[in-house]
Length: 118
Ligand SMILES: [Zn+2]
Image (tube, rainbow, N blue to C red):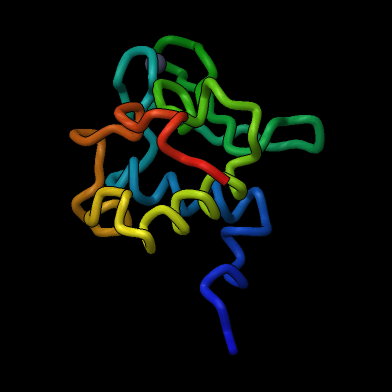
């Protein structure tokens, strides 16, 4: 039986970031520092952290994790998604988490680390 947990985003860290980015940044990456989104470039390279962007307006780097519950944690993003998915199935996560309405207006930062148990 195919499980939702077999999906890429739960095992591939880069896919996990992409999944979260698509939900928090429906209109493209937004700089955490200056909220600009027009002059943003994705950092690439073997030594670059996954999901790292650079804002050329304020010259600061940022990731989708900044300002969210993910940032304070050293748990891999894919592990978070597994936990959130499990919580959603138990009905303890916001029903609209996986829906298109999740955006910057409802930041993941409102999530409390303690509410996600493994
Ligand atoms: Zn900026």
